[in-house]
Length: 212
Image (cartoon, rainbow, N blue to C red):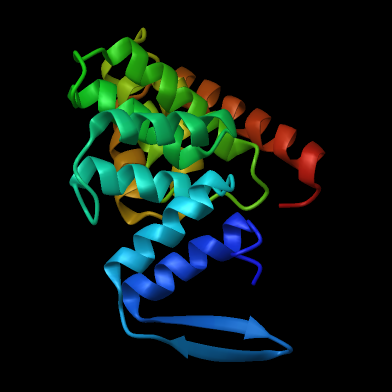
């Protein structure tokens, strides 16, 4: 009923239910498994309704469907439209995907400067979340650009800050390995500066959220 009334979040979960055939729902202190017969068309219908309703998770998922031609006719224009809709709400996944589009030249000319702009927006959005989860690797991508001077001036201290934040935001062994490798390339001065920037970032987050 909530989904039918335009609740985007409810519609998004219904789209997952019809795609996978099963979701777990927490209510009244209990976890209940809800099962239906998978129905791709019904999943897409609910996903579109949820996206129209403003749910950013649905908007990003619908964009991915259009990029891959999954359940819909492949259409880059539609994918881009839904990514921009989600990006207006500062959704970190949408911002990251826009960066990827420009870095990889997906249906647009490659433009690493624009890619860095979107990666920074994505990393900034993550840093403003109380419990960030960098599932797409936005902070790692931004750090990589600073490490190699791609689209920005090379800045290992800035790379350190974002790589350390990204590693903690996802507890990512690959990001931790990249951070260890980066530290070997940095001078003591760069390490000190990088740690200062990271602590400054964390201080801003503590002022906003309290103890993290």
